[in-house]
Image (cartoon, rainbow, N blue to C red; front, side, top):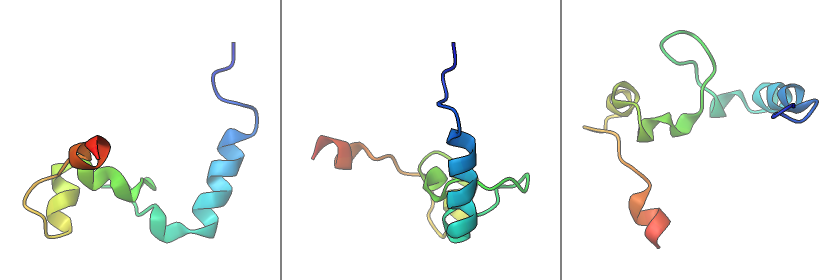
Length: 61
């Protein structure tokens, strides 16, 4: 059973090349999503936030 559709990783790589600013490297140098500020305290602080914040209010709305 294949959980990831064939070609999905190639598509994701193409998107990362097209819009590299959306995938800044994490502390290991791996391109990662900008949304990690919601669960990664270090990334939130890098961006000037005291803590990560959840999408909770947005989800409820």
